[in-house]
Image 1: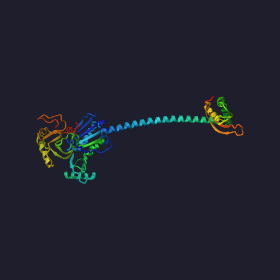
Image 2: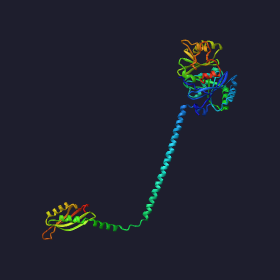
Image 3: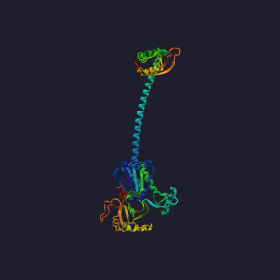
Image 4: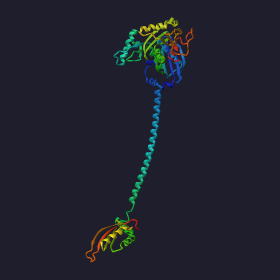
Length: 277
Length: 188
């Protein structure tokens, strides 16, 4: 049955917890939260998801899963100049992964936006985590429509609103992933751990972005469009030549001096960041 | 708008591919199904109509064949003609003779025979609607005048001189001639 006629399960896995949501409707889809639970370790994610699905009696439904970038590894790959087959790009991606992370792909499952003539994004998720999640979904006869890391899901959700000259960022549980686009493509990507004190510093983001731009030998952007748990301090750091905006929930401006209603962490914050809430 | 990033870790399956088809494709597929159904119904109706027509044609053909057969049987069973062709020909000749407009022709001849012309023979041929005659005149002018008078008669459609000679054995040496007349169909 086509997706327009059926409700879908949305499973959000963040380091701090799991959220189970369901979407209904076609023209004006709405999402309801079915269940939420805390998560101790990545190893227990599949077991907790199994419990949630059992509790909510979710069976034989289409489902999408988004995982926080905390578990994902993203890297850009420049395809070999003489790439003629997909396997050439695969080898280049594997070599780049090893060069960046100092280990082979063995424990990681890779997926990439394969391009033969332009740099492309490759992502990897822990193979064990992925296999456990798929096993749980099979057990509950879920039709897995998509498993995507948060950055990919957020980019695809908000790409129509991205402005040129701005970077795109996803912040979740103090893990910031920044994307730099050239033309209509993602050109570069940086993932950073955000120190706790930086969340209250209105200038930290600008300084960090300028430093990363220098490292990438790019001009500093005019601003960053963020999604996820964006701290209010960052949003207040805007000036004439620098903007920091939150891309989702544009109708909810923050009051000065108060914590942003969109800030925070957890699976529900992640669900909002990918446009599921 | 930025290009989408095509990264997905979900295992590929046919059900997933079908489910992810855009609504437009489903709409097109639905439209295709409706059109195919409509075409099938139309074909079915046409087939039925054709079968009905074929049955009707078969019925009519069978009726026609039966009628032909009956006609052939009737023709076979019909007794031989009572009159032979020779007899029929003779009867037709008699009927033609009877239908010859004698009175009209004789009246016309009588009218034309005025003057120094003597009618010697008068042989009507009903089959070819011709009258052949032989006559004598004292001189050629009388002969010509006689033929012209015959032409003027309404009982005849035409008159012509077919042969003429002088009768030398006769002392007065009259001119003997043969003529043909075409009698008109409308003559009573």
